[in-house]
Image (cartoon, rainbow, N blue to C red):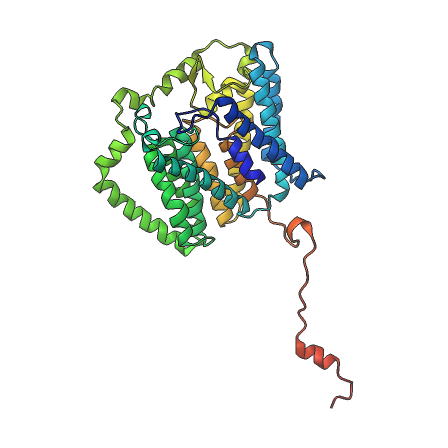
Amino acid sequence: MAWALLIVNTLGSQGPETLVAIPRPIAQAVTMGSLLIAFTLALLLNPRLRVRPSAFLLLLTLLLVLSIIASARIDSGFGALMRCARLAVFLATLWLLSYWWQGTVAFVRYHIRTFAVVLAVVATGLVVAPGLALPADYGGRLVGALWPMPPPQIGQYAAIVAGLTLLLWLGRRTTVSSVLVFAVPAIGLLLLTHTRTATFALLAGLALAALSLVLTTSRARKAALGTGIGGAIAALAFWPVIQAWIRRGQDAENFTSLTGREKVWDALLADNRTTTEQFFGVGLTDKSFNGLPIDNGWLAVYHEQGLVGLALVFAFLATLAAVAVLRPPSIERACAIFLITYCLVASYAEVGLGDASPYLLHLAVAAALLIPGRNGTTQHGAAPVTPRTTPRTSQYNAALPDNRS
């Protein structure tokens, strides 16, 4: 429940028109209230404040301190401090829940189930109000008709659900019925969003994760071979359709400039910044520059937390990647590789690496998967029960008198 509420907090409070108009203050109350409830639940579950050592969370905490320093300036505004407070509660909840990070797929299942519920809400909106779910203002791309969610957000959730479910199936941790219930509808919703970033990130993450399983799982070898051959044939047969889906009706200029993103990036990099702003940033913002969305995770961190923030983000991503590479092959490692790769690829066209966001939750799941198993102990460090290994015949003979002849 605490993890689900953390995900609800990252849903956002503005976007396309919905079937029932939700005032933004009410939507913000729902998302922020879910964060406070998640923190309260985590504190009730872990009153002794026991946590697992985590370089990922430690570096994120340093990033929080940097954000507070950058946002404490007068010209940063009150909104920057509010975003810092949200990030502080967000990280405190992750620290409290880290006590249950034990290198298993438990949090992967929490992740899939919660995002699947969100996608079910999106699918319900598509059935109830198809005109609002596929509006012309968004080029006919799928949006949230019951809760305001733009296409990239839905595409991200769908890609994560599909990718993790398929990996659990490759690792024989779930059944074909789960793939049909979770992964197949998620892929359908992803295609309806026409989100190129989520699609490419999904394919890249699945490719690397599947390669990490090829040498240990026969199902992964067969799936990799079948997908490679089938994908090549499908690409040749349906290339015009695939090309049209990728272009989304855009002209050459919009397509090459990533829907105008490069113009904002060039303006951000060309902006005259003081030495303080260059190294420590301007504080947490709404991820925009001159009123336009930045839509790049690295440039957003540079704008808000400066070069020092970039170094911290690079450090926790490099740490997760290095630990994943050094771990022995397993389904836990494959899921972590998928999540890390997805976040790295998606960060080129989406923000969320330096603030409370679904991307930090994805990386937190990866960190939970990479925690070393507790050898020799059961859950929460309790001593294991040693089974009785003495054969019954030996026990019987030991009970006989010495002159049992």
